[in-house]
Image (tube, one colour):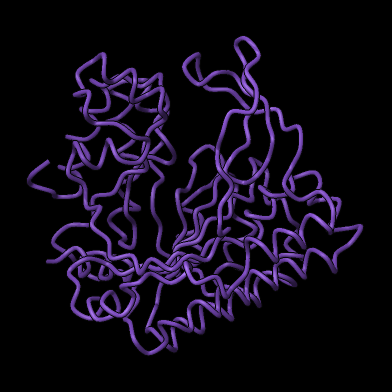
Length: 366
């Protein structure tokens, strides 16, 4: 089977020669550790090192539509303070953090890109203009033609409604705005929706799309950061406008959302909005067996291998594969670690996991 056939049949709960081989990635500090323990130095990058070394199924045909900040904010160091640095990040926020070479740290945010309506209007007009010419790749016509016969899955990036606003405003500021000025929050979500639809119109009837990919990260260990009531009121109809459009114009049947934390309260609402693949299913907070039992073949699942087992060692890794076996046998499930591999995982343990994983999914060459 081709990669495309393999993925689509898996998401449809149909028989396959094997499910796709995907991984989530690893922290920069993890890659640095692995270089000392056996990973060749030329394999680098949070997202690139693992796929490149282990030859995972990472071939995708991305139509290259830019629906985000354009131009984006430049990540740059603004000030050096001993062991700490003050940076501007890709979301336009100013934050203080420990120097990366000294380890990972949680940034202390000093200012966000959007703190007032005036800030929003400036970013809306200067960086979220649907008419910016660079949003459309120069070879879009060629990419659209390739989409019909591609052996790799065809994807479009659908971005975010809540997650981007949280990054641009900060969670506390956005939460206050939801209650102090809900009209403003809805206005921002509407602008993002209109921007996306205006860009996706460029491929209407011209491309065959397999998967829309979303990022929200809007849940913590106990549930969503936005009430299900507001989610249903503001986000579900806007998701549906986008997913319906891509289904009608590009035959796109699947949409996958990347969201950490406890997602149980939002799964039925995502499904209502046309988002039907959940990822990465953090074991500490989400019960994929419960989601599967409740929604059956309406929802496909990705991830759900507890990364903490990689720290504990080979016996724990074996037990984790045993734990997910019944879910795997039901179909519609692509297993891999439930988030980035942390730096307390040895190269030896990760290689052991990879060998077991390939055998588990039926991949002959690993």
